[in-house]
Image (tube, rainbow, N blue to C red; front, side, top):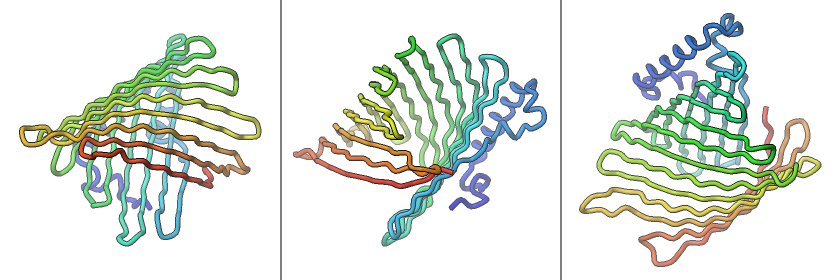
Amino acid sequence: MFPVTMLTSPAFLSRKTALFIAGLLAAGLVTCSHAADLAASPYSLLFGPFLGSSLFIPGEIRESRLYSERKIQLQPGLNWLTSTDLSGARHGQLIPLRSQQFEWSTGPQIKLGKAEMNFPLMTGGERNALNMPSSWNGTNPSLLLNLGSRDRVRVAGSVKIYNNSTSSNTKKTASFSWRHALTERWAIKTGIKQSWETGSNNYLDNSVETYASVQASLPHGWRWNLSGSWSESKYGLSNLLNTPQQNHVAELSLSTRYELYDGWRISGTLSASQTSRSDADRAMMEQSSKIKLYKEF
């Protein structure tokens, strides 16, 4: 699924992205130069043990993913986090389509009392089903604040710059979430997320989403989640001749997961959504169900 040249191919990894990765690694090595475990193995800053997963539906789709995460303690209250994510998909219907994607992030994690702050720098690339390569660089800082034993608040933001052969877009996001533990097994979570994307040719893509969920971790390996969300989006060209498309989406879903044995899991989801479009007279209703048997290794 992943060719050996995936991360080094000139078409897949631009010169700017390669220099960005080298800068991140150099910054990390300088910051971690006094860590005893890195002195013997600087490679550990780049990658950790990989986990893999695969999904195969004969005649329809084949998906594979490799994921790695590494946390290194530099000193009490200061860690260095690095993650790598490789994924690929092949849709084998009438016309086989392939897509590949990778993302790599690295940066410090600071813990001060009940607060935990992350300052990762990110880079990535994608080759979509039309064989058009693109890349992005950015950052995704976040603050996690534990308010006692039952409440947790998270504030995050991100800035990503996307580049391909025809355009360059900048996407900014801001989010806030709150989680409250009702008991040891039951919890509620709510939040809001807003994003702004601008690019060449007066293109824009702005959205806002609010959501709430009830989560349960039950005996014998069962996990349940009931969630609802509402979102508004506006995207397209914005000029004298074009008006951006505007959508409103309301969604409700119920999902469950059960731990089987030897790493095997089974999960299922029921969902329903209603989409209202500015260019349509009637809202569109959609219901779906999904069940999956998988194993992480």
